[in-house]
Image (cartoon, rainbow, N blue to C red):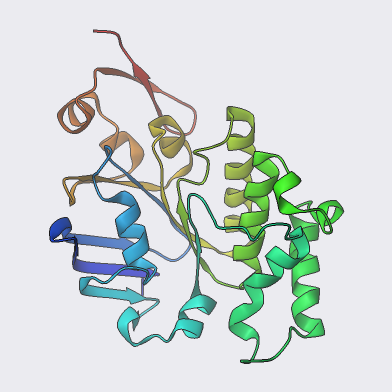
Length: 256
């Protein structure tokens, strides 16, 4: 039973088809990254799988049709980390991560001691305990990204949807965040479905890549099968050289 199965997914926004018959499967414990040129529909796909956009077609999460999952049940299975999370002004790190426990707090109720304990455990594991009372806005980009992951992990979800998780980070913080996600995946059995623009980084960390173009899947498979000069020239209109790396192919732009 896969963690995610999408069949014939179609999304129309303002009368314009953005996704047109997408099929996708993500195995339990797998890291799948969706790549593609601007406007291909990557973020739309993630939002549709997360139940944040209306879509037609079938989407099942761990064997359960997404359409029948209530909001709280979905949040206990899946955590979404968008590109630019909305952070309430002045909110401290501890309070922000505690928002991840919302699916477990009764309506009009308050967090329990168990909820607070979960949050402190996550902060400890992600080396964020020293920032607990700091306003989130005062942290560096890499530190904030770890806090966003902490909130997702505090949900107790086993599926992480990461939309461009390193787009605003320098290369050092990119590595820090992605290594953290990979370690948590191995230690906690998490499943990761992500989108990325950086093709070399995508190839380094993903088990499998899915290439979207014009709202459709045009290639999928292990990184060496998808990151080819021919496919990237066709769908990105890019001239590149592919260099074999230790963990995956590296994509090097070549001047015309």
